[in-house]
Image (cartoon, rainbow, N blue to C red; front, side, top):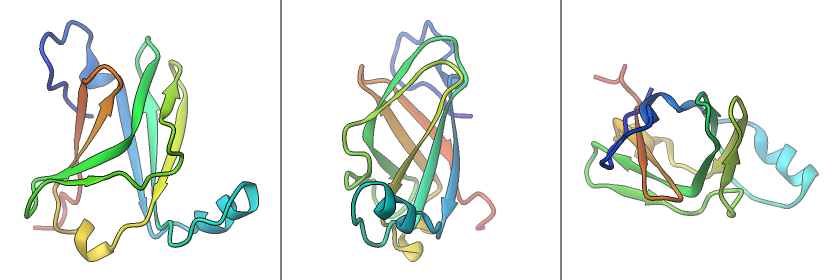
Length: 125
């Protein structure tokens, strides 16, 4: 679960978005079959709306708690993700596994400027 980092957090935002991360996914072939050739798409992130309100998540994320914050903007789909309550959608990007392993948190932003942060790589010392 993430946490809300913009006041006031009158909604229980920290429980509204969940994520599941798949490194070294084989989705590149599926994306190529469905729409387009996007090489090296090895990172797949599922975004889950667990709340009662729709969410509109920007097509980018920030890796934190590493050498320096790293903003990833080369994300597919590039138009953002709209999630109805209970809905799950995936985003894809290319990520060097050595870079990924240097970070301990990931942050997503809603269209309204509300951030959702999640711990990652917690088993990596």
